[in-house]
Image 1 (spheres, rainbow over the protein chains, first blue to last red):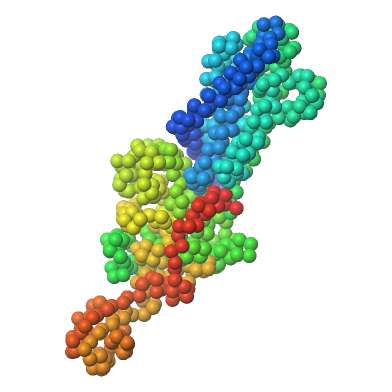
Image 2 (cartoon, rainbow over the protein chains, first blue to last red):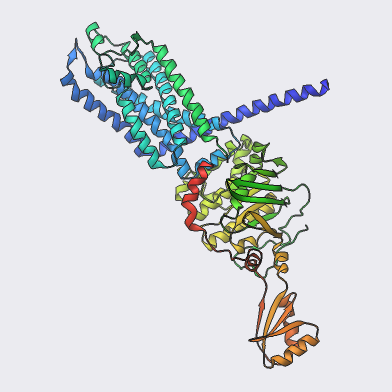
Length: 288
Length: 349
């Protein structure tokens, strides 16, 4: 019996390796498709830039005179990382919309009947959406000199990393929502009801210190808060911010009186991403 | 069951007909084995104790009206739905225990389009090739080959959004064949296509069978399409009510009838009866019941002796067969249900 056991135990390992390389190829292909589709929809690329630039003008140049500056540090500089985050967040959520689109046009079926694991499809979808979102967010960085925000190569790398993390968690969330939504209209309604409040209550546009209790509560239960804060903290780390300005335009998030570290915030975002990744895979895994 | 090419009679000219050369020998393991299959949705018994086998290399048709259980059965065979009882094996693999191997052994063409129209034909095929693990070194050749089979090689780099409905459908068939499946499932493949495109599509399917030796399992509610098949299962209310070759199914209804309008019907009837034919007087002349009605016409006319006005040969059609087994006519209920069904599909409750 023992002579038979050896080849039998070797075979599953070969099969497992083959399977894994197959799933990786699946992820790559789904990712590539997202990018091909993105590159072919010019209106989507354009709107991905116009919206954050509009926010930057309205909030940056529009509100700065009103808010004023503290020790030479103005509101434009505060809001800039928030605008980058908004650009990433909205692109990520809407790239998840392609699942609903695929359902309406039947292509989802082609993917779901393929002999591949559902998680591989979801990973491909999420990594595709996250790549697009991070690219959009990173391109926003070219506006930094215009605002007077300094960037170093290291900060750019850190920002890209944080953008990817944020995009992954939001695409996972969007994919889960899309997996539970049958119609395009439904998804758009859900996105409008969730995305805008999440963006506005994330600390992207105003400091999270000294808020009324109810607003503090809403911002702290918003997962996007913990994705925006590290982005701002990383960018602020290379700015010259006088202590008075740092107090007024705080980049920190406090929870129950504790100031959260960047790593805690990252941990919260990762937990959020994992949670919705699992839910998204389950949402797509039902068989009659 | 031996090879049994359909007869030419009764098949409209526009549809291709399998010739002896086309029909492979049906030996070896069956491509599809179904035993006691049942699928229950609450109180509704969508598939009711269905058993059948599809031979390797056969074109097998599931014929029945909408809601008869065709799509449910095909969904079980494609591992998209679980049976509530019974077993099904496709290409030798159990659909419940080995869904991945089943999926890799089958090609699927659904009722609704499942192409990405923002991708080119080639990109759609490449996506499929990766999903179905077509080895990288074979990919290029295989994509070229299937495009050739459906005559779309010149549209290889065009976006699918520029394709007509018929071209898109043929591209889907090509895609279904990309990973050289043992069985190609076509669920109502010609729905919404014009007659010319339908005929073209059937040419493609028979070419595939001849050149790629694939077993074709299709569902349809078009009679003329079912006649292209080697064997037909008529399904109604979840049960198979008849299963045989088109010729034999028609033979179940009996022989052909030949109606002769003659100058003297009474004498003609006597002459025919004397010659051993089963015949009777009908309103417009004499009706003869005989095998191979068309071949008999010359002899009958000769026997009658009197002047013959018109001759009408009627061979039972599959419409007659369906009516006979179900008591209803198949109506063309195709189009109007589609958008709702397409949406319901995605979710698979």
